[in-house]
Image 1 (spheres, rainbow, N blue to C red):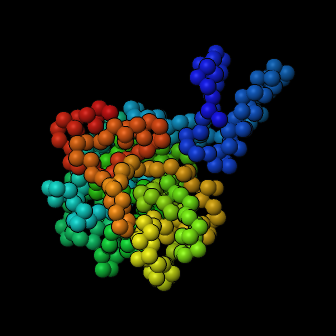
Image 2: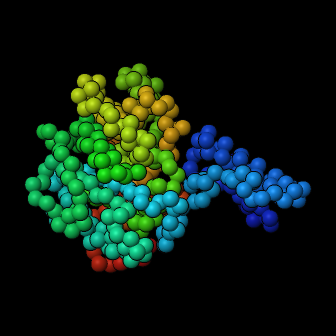
Image 3: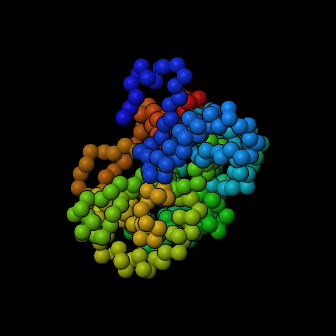
Length: 349
C-alpha cells in the first residue's frame, strides 16, 4: 500500500520504489535491498570485513532510476554497445508536407547534441535501420544515415501481418550490425530525452521493454494467444536472437488465417504475433521483459477495427512529458513538424 504523507516526510525514512508494476523478480530484488539496508549496519558494527566480502545489491533501473532529461551518466559497460534505431516508415504515412521523417531538424539536433555532450561519434553508439517499401529515392537529412532492409514483398499494410515481417527484417539487421538493443520507431516519433540518455536507459536494465497486456479469455480460446502488446517496443539481444529465428512462411501459415479476425477485435497481428511466439519459447513475459511503454501514444475515439493514434499538431503534449517523468517513457509518437517556437521549447525540455 502507498505510504502516507506523514511517513514519507518523516526524518530518517528511506523510500524504496519500483518504477512500474513490479514483477516477481522486482519484488525479490526489492526485498534483497531491504535486507542489506537493515542488516549491513549491524554487520559492520560487529565486524569490519573487506568491502569485497559484502554482497552488493542488484544494479538496474529498480535501484538506479534513469535520469529524467538533462545530462545522463554513462552506463558502466555501455562502451562499444550499440542501439539500433529501427524505423518503420512509409510515404503513405508522411507528414502534411510529405516528409517521411516528420521532424528531421529535431533528429539532426539530437545527433549534434549527442556528439558534443559525449565526445563520441553518433555511429559508435547507434545504427539507424529503415524498412520502407514505398520510396525509391534515398532520403536526405537524418535518415540519410539509415541502412535499408529488404522490404516485405507486396508492401506493408496498416495493422497487418506484413508489419510483423517488416519488424523481423529490422530485428535481423540489428543483430547483423552487432546491436545489443533495437527500439522500434515510426517516422512520426520524437525522443523526449537526449540520445545518450536514450541509449543508457535502453541498455541499463538488460531486459526488453514491452507494454504488454493479458488477453481476455475469449481471445485466448479463439486465437490461442495470451498477450497483446503495444507495437512500439525495445527488444534486447536475447529476445532479438530468438525472434530472428522465426520463419516468415511458418508465421504466415499459422497467423494468416486469423489476420482479419484479430483486427476486428482490435488485436492487430503486429501487436499480438511476436509476443505470443516469444511466450511459447521462453515462458511468461513477466520473467524477461519490463512491462512499460517506450512510446507515448494517445488514441482517437474508438471506431470499427484497429485504433488510430492521435496526431499532436501543437508540439509535444504536457501529458507526454509527465509520462516521461513518471513512467520513463522515452519517445512521443505522431508529433507534427515543429515550428521554430515549438522546436526551441522541445530542446529546452
